[in-house]
Length: 220
Image (cartoon, rainbow, N blue to C red; front, top):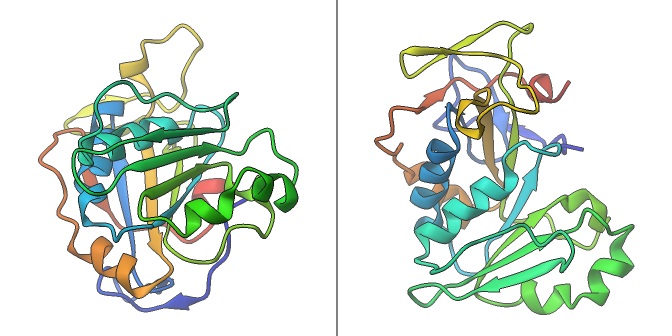
């Protein structure tokens, strides 16, 4: 469930449309590689200990985004969803590493806290949490929310990077031929807002910044 934050005007409002919290930006990604490129560009800009809430249904691209974060931090080796282990820690190439959590199997704040969540929240590594709503109120209102959803418009194809991409996907489709993803990022605090505001769009033909649709429109 995507939160419904209070609205403020930001430098990235389009046509006077208010945007959630301090800064919000939206991107359309045509491929997993484009999604990873966006996350890789964002990761080194984020403050130490930043909490990232990754929202989206199964297959929305949450782990793909985390893989991009890992690349941006200089993590060596594969990054997989910790669906069964719940937590995976990755050392970065610099001072900041990555803690990747998947709360899909949790049923509330107590179970999240039993994992030692407070220690991760007090640490300096980026903390990327998939299915954050399963932690109840254990996660503070800070950091960055990343909402990913298929960018289909009434089932029609969407033009991205000069080509048409279908708005639906079958189980046997190639993973690089998936529908485009709408990626909405919004900040909850000043330090994260500053990072998001300075983010330059990566030079990837499968990625472009767009006007953010009204909150909730991409989650119906």
